[in-house]
Image (cartoon, rainbow, N blue to C red):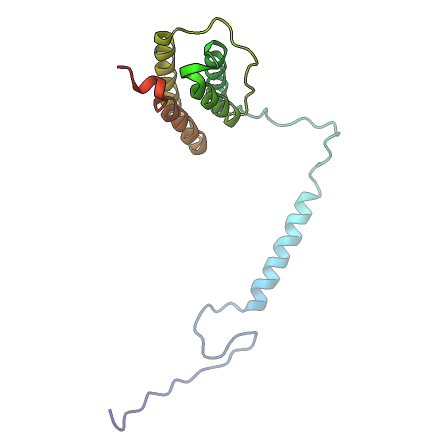
Length: 168
């Protein structure tokens, strides 16, 4: 529009550390910095009364609560260990043994050294399916999302083994 001009805005400058012409809070930057410094001094004063020495005579106020997922992890390790003890390390179950060893390592477990009284093929299928069902239930029941994903992937890894896919 020819001849149109923007209305002039009068900007009032207030004392303090502000940028002219920028709307915003009425609190200056200096006030915020001062209050932050005062809060830091107050926290330091409160912490001086704390006893941070681990060898001191003061007792902890309450015992730490155990992680509810620890029981699931212990049970999962036990199931994988029991399977590894009875699975033949060669033949059709060789890839299954390797998968269980890797799964046990992912759960911070240690694989057993020897196999005792190996399962028959039908026993392998029955025990592995039962284990996969357990891992699925544990994945749903645990509180930790990362652990739930790990347990679900172990269940899927068991179900994808060739020794189990060929049977009904």
